[in-house]
Amino acid sequence: MQTIEMNKKAVALLEQWDPFDVGPKAYAHEIVDVVSDLQRLDHPTDLAKRIREIYEQSYKLWIPIEKCVQISYKLLAIKYEAKCIV
Image (spheres, rainbow, N blue to C red):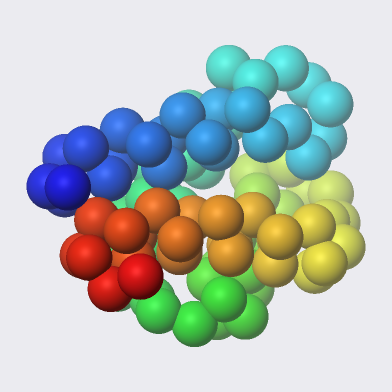
């Protein structure tokens, strides 16, 4: 799977994730930042912390780290599948 396909899958997953119940199309800027960080981060906890920072910075609302860890594992699975690591 190429990087473009990986990014599409990651975007689709993040569009479904609605941590603040504001509607799935409300997170376009955050999704771009998370997908960018997905390229450079390989550990679920590191990615989860970054996801929480990105979303909290935009919405000034707290997200439990557990929710961010769950989505980070799914994102990293997409990344590892794309790199044929799994």
